[in-house]
Amino acid sequence: MKILMFFQGRIQHLPPLITAAACMADCGAKVRVLAFGSTEASANYLRSHGVELVLLRNKHPETFLGKVILRIEGVLRLIWETQKLSPDCIWYHQSHFLFWYHLLPFIHKNALMIAHSHELDSHIWIRWLFQKALVRRADMVITPEPNRAWILQQFSGSTAPFVVIPNRSSDDMIPVADGTPCTEKVFREHGGATECSRFLIYQGGFMPSRCLKETVLGFKQLLFKDVGLILMGGEPDSQIFKELAEISSDDSRIVLLPYIPPPKHLLVTKGCIGGILLYEPASLNSVYCAPNKIYEYATMGLGMILPEFPGISSLNKEFGLGVVCNPTNPDSIAQAMREMLSETSEKYQNAAKRFLESTSDPEKSYQDIYPKLDKMIRNKKG
Image (cartoon, rainbow, N blue to C red; front, side, top):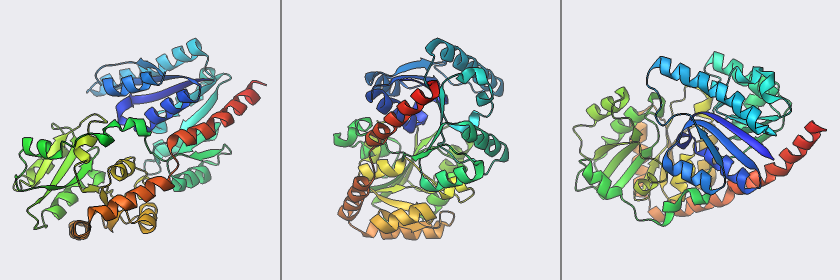
């Protein structure tokens, strides 16, 4: 089985792509990934699993024109790689940027089309329109969360099989699980208060929808001098990074860290006692969120500050992963932090273990998909 995966971005920013490519290669498929770029660590990991890489850039362009040129180059290279590889399957990641490629019939020929929909784009009408069109044409659709699958299937009218694979990374993608945490060291190096010995962390992109300002304002209400807050994953030159730095400048318990490529970022996470996972309820994509960080927090045994959304709340009710709150209300966030900090670490470590044991590991999920794809390919070829 020959699979061509396509992602219009940098590989390290989409861990589920890394997992999918490595697992399918381990199942015996010949996998080639076409992407805009990758860190050395992510590229080496994929190559160690026998995945071939075609990377267009070492550095992502900053100008609008540069990005347009890169996207055009991406689709032209997709056509070239399709002709060169003659794949049995073309596997699209992040469908909201792929709104017209699937309309080019000569790209696909006799290949199956897999739509791996990592996001639900119902809040942006043009993306939603094209996402539904892509899903309708796909031979199989993969989503990370069952509610998203139901919504996408109902609104698109797709008759393709839908498969739910959680955004959980393979165990060998987290080699730092047995490593020594560097949390306190990094916290101090970035000006954190020496009194702090317990840490809450947010890891991920710095976006307005992640309720980071509300998180800082909520944390500042806490009176614990031994508790620090780490926000990790921002671009120091970005406006939101600067705004967060300004509102936290009077509290040395709060430290902002730039993006640290995986899996090294988990050496910071590992030394924390609580992980923050909040989203503004501005879209169905947020309400039915499916973040990979919930699995990373759980792997490290962290308690969690979670939004009171249907999917996440039901998980918390079943496993007791942490405390839910109103993610847009600093007072509610502060109260959730107090409740979580009042519990023992062992309570959340045990809850995280139960949660992980209940979730199918990605290797098993892709092993189940492989024979189904193989049968679909043989049927398509006649």
